[in-house]
Image (cartoon, rainbow, N blue to C red; front, side):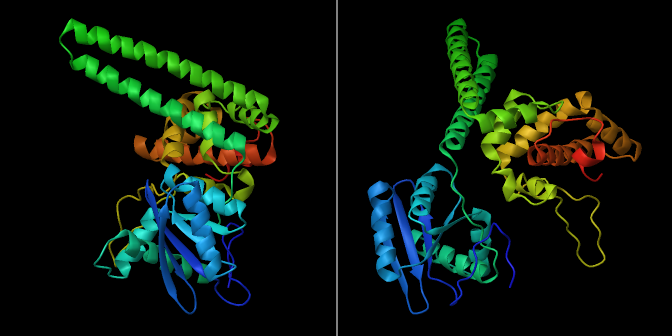
Length: 342
């Protein structure tokens, strides 16, 4: 049996007990599956509840692995706690667990049923050596991600107010909306200042930021988003794995003799990273010599503009991977080394 370096391995004595956890804002529903039994437990989703859950699991088995869905902040604190307690932890895509539950023809959907389904999914994936391994991030990485995501939320909120203001007819409403926009603008500037300060305080982040911004088309927003959303570059052994992480790999859909006219991207990946790469590609197609040449070749082949942008997004992931991996700034003379295959 084989497994990647980022997957949990099967125990020498067989599959260790698996703890499936269904996460909600207030509660955690857990299911422990061992070779002999299936047990359920519910606790509050807070630090005390995390301790109680770990103690309950240890009472069943002194060694276990935990699996929960990657659903944002509600489960992140639990994953960090279990990781610190030296529990093998896996965060999985909710689409995977949903597909698994559908394949099992489950007719009931409750938190208890979901927890058991997650545990069964984790057990099956563990046997195949395909259960992804959670790696805790550093404090500065967590802080950067929180700041960058807050900045993005403010930018989204600002655009929403601008859209409402365009539909407003009363002068009083327009004045009120403009005050909101001005306030949000000040908050965005403060958050961006905090981001710059944080990066400047950590040598690793500063070095990686400088490497990323050496790429034509990669500005401060793209660079900070890549640093905030992309795991440590050492976790990737090939550039196309970075593209897959961003959901930029093509989805092949063939059936019988039917050949599809196009192969859309999977979009199964980090949506924030993919959105940022789209904006970077729009800039790079005009300012990055590698991307300009690459786009020109694709247009000559008759590729549609949308396909060209997606191809440039993938090429950007190759550049980002090579530059961060080799710790070498962008150099247009190193096209084959930096950009990867066409």
